[in-house]
Image 1 (cartoon, one colour):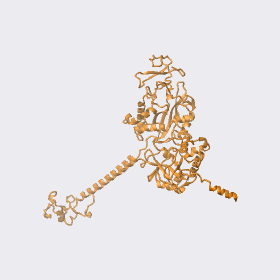
Image 2 (image 1 turned 180 degrees about the vertical axis):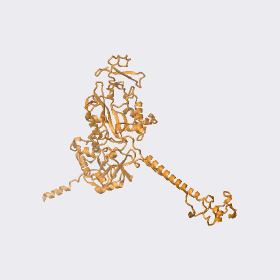
Image 3 (image 1 turned 30 degrees about the vertical axis):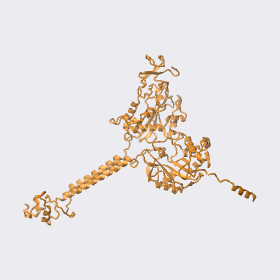
Length: 628
């Protein structure tokens, strides 16, 4: 009894649990297809292709007034060791889709430091991620929506139907966030469910305001896990919608005009008959008498007509225009009139059909794309040799070669439209980026010339994809994929570096497959000693260049089981590239090169012009290991 009273007494002075400093959590679950189907695009995590399901975005503390705390404790930084037992589950259910590809730690670090540190009074780092995973396991949003007939198929669904389906399954109304796809359609991006401030139970949202003020939204394909191409539809593209509406208006106007014309024609034809003339000829004649138009009809009596009988008076070819007649008096229309009206209506429908067809997207007449990048070091360290680009801002990275339409049988279209040749003014806003990521290292000839490379790529390949791209969008798409897919970083993360070492061909292919979900094609060449080395990488895209797909056939050209990853060409103090230019030694008289002194017969040489110099220099490199 005394103990009980003591506990009661102590309870009077026991403080209640500290207020966490916020009112509730948002559990944010995002649809990968909507994340990827934007101008920003996405990259697979280095751990492989995520599941085709809603993934966790975060668990966010919020206030009832709509604001939220963030970055509450900079001293409590993210510590990967705290969640080491959860990593495999996080990579499955809380994957990152940001570029460049990574394992997910940066994403989790961001979520903890921005949001998790504001919930420290409720949970520590491990608890934050563990509770979020537990909440995710309690609700299967994709199954809920699929059971309600709402599927990720690029169709549009009523926003209220999406919310109703989730509310019916969970008992709570969600908050819906949308984003825009490249065609500016609103699509389902995130679903937010409210959780109490202990982080354990779902609850009604204090502010259930959707950030998607549209009655219908699109539920896009899960592009990051689907290899099927996305066919554009009439309702997806606003420009096509406007064209469709315009065509319907034009066709309706044509049909209306045809009907009016037929009616007028019918009235004119009716003038070949005088209503009531057979019964009251004198009355009809008096009505038909118009001195200015038909003076021969203005007579005093029937006897003034040259006709000898009433039968002649009602001959079908006698033109008598009556100012008043009944519908019953109209004679049958001629076959000519009926055929004319029917022909105009049929023609109108044909025009409508042609307009509808023109407003529909015509599918590309090829099957897929190769997006090809090459490694400059493999060109320079080869029998052919290279010419460094004249500009100085070239990236030390894989360079774009081109985007090439292909057929499934291994052939490809080329030079499809000689009337639409390359025009650099159409890509003037992209030139600075192209000079960095799409340079010409003497792939064909020296001196290098980026403009000729771009011209070649458009004239040969781009002219065959005009059902998908114009010139500007063709080059822009290449640059976006180059930004999206950092092949060098992907390989480095797997320990494959351009250090002149040998790596397994399958090792290189698997590293890329792990990042994008599909195996690439690899093309090799030989260095000056005959060793096979990594030259080009082929990535397959669908025929709208929207997503990665499995290659119908993989062009593994001239490769061995182990290939060399050559170094990137070095640059000297003048900014020129010194590399193995040719396997042959030239006994040419070498002009003096400033700063290099006399040259001997061991020098490997080649010439090219540099913009900043008026003289054409002989650039060289001695045998490997030699220094000038």
